[in-house]
Image (cartoon, rainbow, N blue to C red; front, side):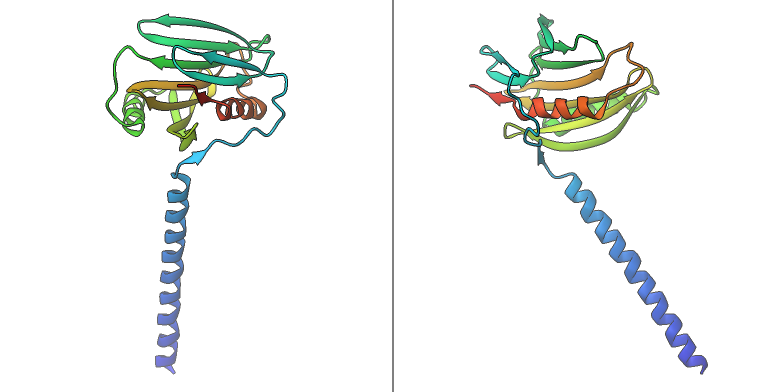
Length: 196
């Protein structure tokens, strides 16, 4: 009878090990799937009435809600377009850094940024994923700042220049980004096109 109990005990241990291994394989596959490149979602709301921002010099266009205003500037080789709402709850920022050329991949570039930020106590990077913008590999990161709250940054490298989009809460906005604002940001990115 003791041998029978010992046999059932061994079977139980083997089953427990198989369950743990199976769970590990499942989690590894989930993480692998989460890190695969994803195309930003197709627009889910009607963009009728939206404006089109177009820049022939840099060869790009994208749509944005008509209630947003914008300004453009170039400083030290960085071309920027900043969009804002009347209520100034958030800013949308688009940059092309042509001040120097980048030979690394977008993943290497973002890793360099992460290395800079990892010792910065006021920033926490809590979600990084690979995305595609007009068939261009990009990386999107959600960052929490103690001052501004949640911001989203999307980076890609084209023609050896870093291109970035961001949605950032306004400094006076104590609420942070809403899900509707985040959805609008993704919808704008889904309309981005290279024109040359």
